[in-house]
Length: 472
Image 1: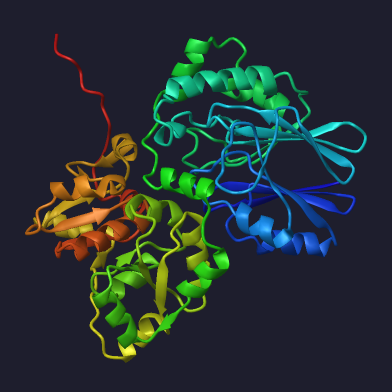
Image 2: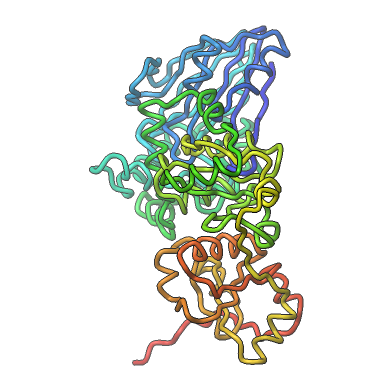
């Protein structure tokens, strides 16, 4: 029997390929399904089932395309109501894959249809638990997402369901079972996930706070709901795509890779409401970009930032990328539901320059130059990291204007003033600068290397956050 985790770091997402005796199953596939088909073909195996642990919020699953191309039914757990043909399994139902079996364990809590799948080998030994977003390594799935789709579900109700699911379905299982979760560190589907992507259930019983047998229901609810940040706005939109269906990835790729000359690109930008999205590195972008384009670099935390900053997944997008990376960018956009890339600049920014088209730039300076210019009385410092990062440590007198809440943050800035903008390492600050530049903020200067470079320069006074005292 073969069990392979197919982990995608930029989404912190784990899909799974299981094979036994010429038959295979895929659990929680990503939008692009060719890798799963090729993996099965490599072993001359037939994909028999496509299992879904729940209706995912943070990415669009490839269940529909994979089901169609592999001629394999989609399987959901109890209570799921998709708008397409699928097997809605009963709790405890068993599916055979070759000589292995996969048992359905209905585990509501993260969502009401959330289901884990228990793998047993040909000898009857329980091998692994594919836990979806019910159980992570070091954490459990946040119980507040389903309420964005179903109004009468509160996070406390969902947390209470999760408490029962963990104690009645998962904790009684053997300690030597391997836990295979749907996500790892970096995902917004939990709070404190480990960097490890698998572990034994026994270790999780010892180290995962949510599996502490001494926690009362009330304590558990408090623990799992405390400190939850608002989910990205695209999450409920992805859920609906996973429930209702979507366009084939093949059509999305064909439309998105429509190559446009500089003149054609300019016409499309002027005649449509498309966003011009430049996915080059921050420093390449700063040296020359198409006016009013925004920068979200493909080599950073790309998909989550697209989801956070472009609220409408049906927004039309025109792409400027590094040559040869167009398909990668379109695919990564489609993973989170942004299917409406309508074209790309053929030849990239070089072709734009060669055509004599207008370019804009953003000044980017070192931490040392920042120190000198502040000493000369130039400008103010804006820190676009998360509030928690800022509170941990920051430059004295820096203004916190988190990228996460850019529409509120921009209200803190005066278009007529000069600002030196930094984040942790230089990725988010250029995103921030590009968006505000497109909105008429012309006096923003980027700090290359961000807070890391600022600290390493030794030229700034850094303050730790001190909790204010209350006067009695």
